[in-house]
Amino acid sequence: MPQIRYYAPTGVDSVSLTEGPSLYVKNGYVTADSRFAVELLKAGFTPAAEDAKLVLGEVVLTRVAALVISNNSPTLIDFDTLFENTTGYPDASFWDAASPSSLLIPAGISRVKFIANLGIPSAGVAAGSLRMTIKHNDQTINGPNPALHEHYVPPVTDATGHKQIASAWLDCVEGDWFAFSVRHIFGGDVSFANGMACYMAAEFR
Image 1 (cartoon, one colour):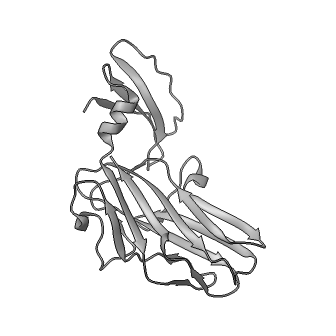
Image 2 (tube, one colour):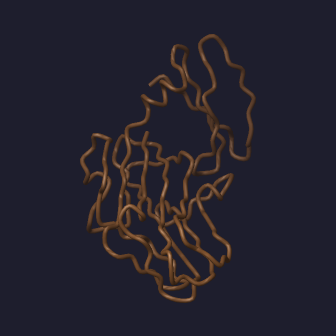
């Protein structure tokens, strides 16, 4: 793989690098253990071409069954359908109906990013708040900008529509799992939209 990663010591949040005839900087990011890292690519590869080579495909989990979430109760979304898998891996590598809330990481994948969507019903929802989170091995993902990973909708009088949460590229290893967690304070049980209005999509490297 024509890619090198430089990991700065713990506590270092910036680094100065000079591109040369055989090496150039792709991007910087913060790892899961809060270290600053920079991806470097060898000459002859453009960032767009390298991205296309590195991205393995995507997996989309959806929920066809009705989704009711109790008030002020953090809830992992149990998906019931693996809607799409373009990775070339078997579906069972990423999702098991016996553990319906978990998106699994198989061997050979080291980075993942997510987008998750929740459909708010068009009627019957009082003013309140909503928090959506992507969890990694039962831990809330935190980073340099938590807003990338945790979406909070403040008290509103009209909570209708679709709410989304998205992550940056995240480090992962075989055996890790990720899940979509929802918590609302709307004063009572809420029947959220299902089908393609409730999904978690992941792209892999």
